[in-house]
Length: 140
Image (tube, rainbow, N blue to C red):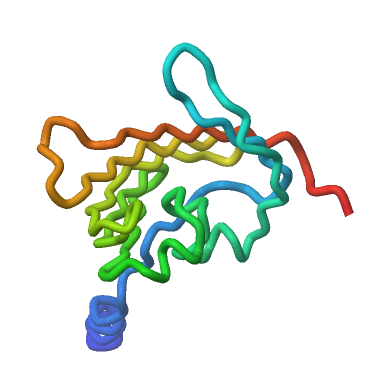
């Protein structure tokens, strides 16, 4: 019996650990962009489970799929309700380092993104803050 337990423990030790993933829930989400004294409405979108699971989706680093496809080394790592992402991308036709931090839950989303274009000083990255709120299920 002890040998079986040791073998079972050894099997579990060789299995890969389950990575955390974006904790958002599918549904209709409203996104705003913060800046200056007021927030600007980006829009309302039906976010699916496939969108949430897809590292190239805007809810895993607020860039479009097309923008991310032009990036090299794009990665998103989730740890509970916090996600970190980064990649070498293009911004305004210039090489740029994109990085950000997402804090998400079933009904809330916040993405703080830094874009440092080639030639920019470290003290002046473009800071973009996207906030989201789940409004309910998607309309069919």
